[in-house]
Length: 421
Image (cartoon, rainbow, N blue to C red; front, side, top):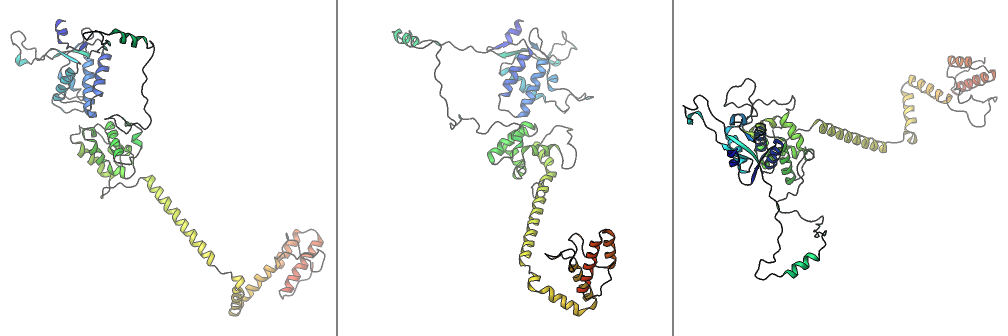
C-alpha cells in the first residue's frame, strides 16, 4: 500500500469506483480540441483500464496488448490490423496523457524477460506495468479575507460599516445583456451542430463549414481531415441544394446497390471519400437530379406545355369567323347542290329533319289544323317512325295530331303525304 500511495501525484486522489473514474476521464477527453477518432480511441482505452481496475486498492494491470483492443475471431497475430484495434504507439500516448491529467499513477513499471534476473524469475515472461486509478482533486474555494490588519495601521471602522450596512441575504446585482449583445471572444456564432443541421442545406460558406463539422461528428473516417477539406468534398451536394444527410448517405450507399461493407481500416480518408462519391457525380463534377426533383421538373414542363396550348386555342378562338353571320354556309350548300345531286338530296333530308324537330310556334292548339305535337313527341321523319310513335300513343286525338304534323312536314318538303290512320 505504501507504493500505491507513493504513486499518487499531488493534486490527485485515489479512485474507489469505476463510475467516478470513467466520468472524470470521459469529461476530460470530451473537453479536448481533438478529432473524433482520437477521442474515440482514448475513450476506448480508458474503458478497458476501468474494466481492469481492482476495487480493493484501485490499481489496474492490463498490459498494452489488452489495451489495444480485441482480435477478430481466429486471429492470433500480435501485429495484425483487426478492425477496432489501435497501435501500440497510440496506447503509449494515451497512458502518458492519462498520467499528465492526474488519471493514472505509476506504481510499478513494466519489465520484459530480457531485463529480468533469470535466476529468480526464469521463464515467467514479461511483467505488465501497474497503475493506480486516480481522479483530480477538487480544490476548495478560498475564503475571502478582509484587508484590515495587513497594513501598518488597521482601520476597522470602514470594514465594519460595509459589513453591517449590507443585508445578510442580499446579492449583488448582475448585469443583464440585451439580445443584440455580441458573444464573448472565441465563441462560435453558429449553433452547435447536431441532427437538425444534417437536414438543412447551408446557404453560405460559414454554414457550409458548420455542416462539415457536423459531418465529421457522424463520420469517423472524415474526422481525420480538416473541416475545410470536408467542405470541399461536399461542395457538389451543397451547390445542388442537398442537405449534409444526403452526403453521408452517398458515403454509405452506392447509387444502385446495398450499403458498402467495411473490410479493413481506412488508410487514406480523402481518397476513400472520393472513391465513394465518384459514382454519384457526373463527368463535369455535378450531381444528377433526384427522382423527386426529376418528377417536379417534368410536372413543371407539362404545366408549361398545357398553358401554351390553352393560349394557342384562345388565340384561334378570337381569330375565328362567324360563318352563319357572313353567309358562308349558304354559299357552300349552294355550291354542293350544284356539284352533286346526291349531296342535294342529303341536304334536303337534313333540312327536313331540322324542320321536323323544331318546337311548335306559340299560340297553336292541339286540335287546330296547323297544330304540331308537343315538344316531348318529335315529328316522325318516315312511315316507320310514325308507326312506332303511334303504337306508343293511346290517345286517338294525339295520334291525329301526330299524323297531321307528319303530313304538313312532308308537304313543306315537296313530297306527297300519306292517308291518316
